Image (cartoon, rainbow, N blue to C red):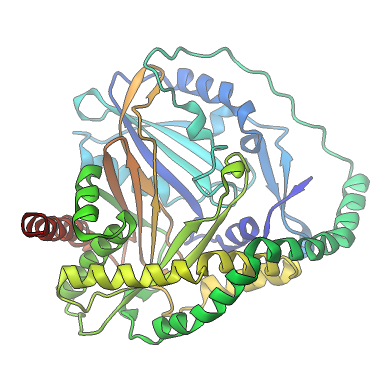
Length: 462
């Protein structure tokens, strides 16, 4: 049995009724919609390419070991490829509401942890796939992901032949107990042996740079944060998106001399500033502290089926009224985090956590996610998507919108995903505490417009 990594197990343990820990997307296609039977056949044919999607997460009593993966002997594609019809008239608002409802429901743990919903009845003859996959299975960046497999680069894709799959036989209770006992003895030794390799990957210079950057991290934590954005969350979700041209972001980046990621963070900063202002909770010097996931997946790990992601903390300077000044502050801050290798070193800390007993890992993860704290107000994740048009069963993918979960006390999170020449900002929010999500989404567009105007002025005078 393959055991989950430390980070995969943390995502697994963090989930509870109000905090479903799946990531996802909404893929919109030109019509006509395929039948559910055809879509099931397509998924079923691709599953052998991603064996994890046939497997159950098996927890060990008392968390004596990390959960492991076993083949589901009762696997049925009908449990995972589902059908729903959008409410009339099937526009953007109806699709967002439908997706928010689906995203708010946890995946069933007695089945492989993924679902794909065919959404029919959209306006203009379109249809969509709402995809959900538990974060303990993938970070959304690795190539070994089911959604990545069902897409074609050509409109000539045809319905594949049905595949055959036979689950591996389950071991007897005695054999399983013996394996668990063996793993309980050997796993700590393997983790301890792997720690020097992790430290070697970081390198002495990286560790020293990380240590020198701790002062910057301490200063970031000392700045007054908008903890009014933290609080209890319920089981329901709001979810919406807005889009922009990738060329516009590149133009802003080139004119203002920063990175696209800096521009994206500046846009989110402007949106939170407008939201706090609308709520009469904006103050000078205030920041919104964001967790910013960073991929640490090496080029030769594209097909590794596990999470290969770290994270840094960034202070979004919402108290600064000047959009250009906000961008400059973010650029300097992110540059400092890169130079001191904070993301790489956070990964090493995860490797050190490998030494913790799974029981303490489970308890610590649940405590960290359940105790209200103002350390982080949001999550902002930016993932580059496919740059060429894609197709499913000959239908062209016209839009791709990302979903990222929210955690206990974090009421709004933002995912950014590019597709061909479009960038989508997908915003997830707690239903009860963020009835003004439309204000935030509109503010994203306003912040983009402000930066574009500044970039145009800079280009004209520069």
